[in-house]
Image 1 (cartoon, helix red, strand yellow):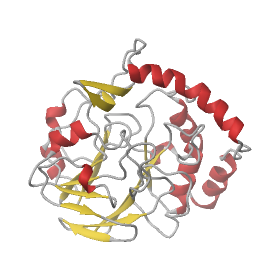
Image 2 (cartoon, rainbow, N blue to C red; image 1 turned 120 degrees about the vertical axis):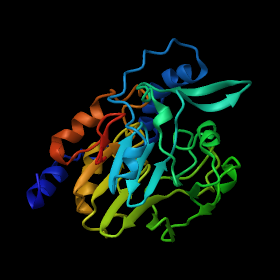
Image 3 (tube, rainbow, N blue to C red; image 1 turned 90 degrees about the vertical axis):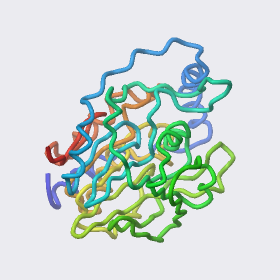
Image 4 (cartoon, helix red, strand yellow; image 1 turned 180 degrees about the horizontal axis):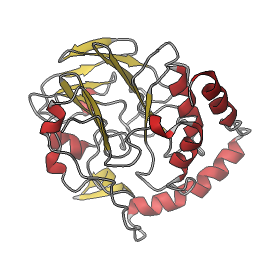
Length: 314
């Protein structure tokens, strides 16, 4: 599927937005949250984790690659762009949430991480899009803290980082930095920034990364938006497609909307993230990817399953 025919096909597949009402949203939340709360509090036995698609490649593979990626679940990716290895929204624990008295209260992964995390390459740059717990895990960040690592975060979030990183840069919308020869620009997605429910003063970003002739978009969390429409000839668009678009389609794009955004920025490849990582009562675990495959050509999808890599030189 390419060109105008592809665009028309994708746009025709986007479901009509449901009629919004507080009552309907309340019904959806009432269906979704009781099992999530039970899982968070440890009140029910969790289902067995699904196996990841693959193990991590040897660390030296990244040094020999110019444009490559691995997906580790939710919005955690390893990206190689030119001379720089980048880790996005790192969450490398089986359960994420509040840590109290040595126990984590929160969501448990439905798909396991690759078993050989010792092969995780050293990242010269960490990119964090916002402070939601499934994108900003303090235990993981403490493990990754290194004086040789730069961290780019949205405004009013830098103090949430543990100590030990080299540089911490708060980047506002349309601001940019160059790190290790890679140009990074922050863009406003259609989402919100918070660590806790009422903590909405904090920033939230998507990022456009460029090195020489290569362009990669890492959107983090976003609902459907035209914020990326000004871009063209994007090599890889990393977009969320699930977890969850019902009843939260105001903040998370559907698979069809993600495909439409990728087409609008003329993306050559689409890397779908933010699905299959946590079970959602309103969203069967395989549904987002199945819906995306109906509207986006399979040969233009990369890293569809947790643990899969693309573009690495052996």
